Image (tube, rainbow, N blue to C red):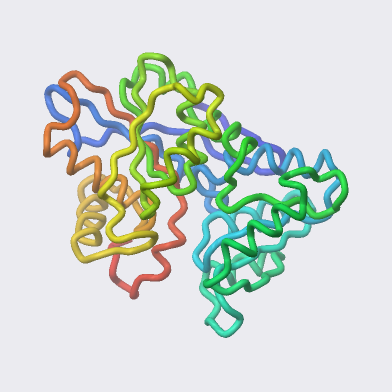
Length: 306
């Protein structure tokens, strides 16, 4: 795909699809949609999930955009940069305390002008939900602060995520992605063609609720999709030596960088499923690299080869 795509004030590179030779065989073809190559800061799916929120905030003449995330949040860093580029102030409500050391990710968000508010861990969800409720669940007519749910969860985030798939994705039979809030997967489900199977790999231990949360974002709640559980490696941002070894091997063989939160677990799952002959012969698999490598900053120096 030639040329650059300009979304509001941020120019992103063309979306590329790369083959994954080590994940392919004579009967199965595997490729990866490299959203991580789009932009060095608004990496991967983050811009797609933010694009219509930014547009809506500008339409409502908001002076500030606020959202929520953890100390290594890809979402907050991307939002801070996007807000700066659109001349809007930003506030990040962080799942940490003031006493915690600032992470490189939070320092980067501050450098882009984001004001941080530390909410602690114990009551983070309750405080977040209260703030969103007080701001009329997305009705921004009465406030100059525009609130976005964590990870861009919501209808506008899903609308943006649906634009990830393009004409070059039509021939694939299986689309598979990591699932955090479920926003991106919902967008992919909405955009997928009838012949395409959409699968999600949850990276949180939220097996009981995530399917319902995804369905609330679907245009057609009866549209089929599949969640494959058991690959969260213990929960959000949890890791182990086997995952790190796999990520390093993937880099050596395919030069695909992955992260310990999302894409490392996703690609580990796809590889495991391939080894188990999970996919039908003749499958053309498209793995969505959602970008965002901020979580790797929590690892000791030298743990990864990239």
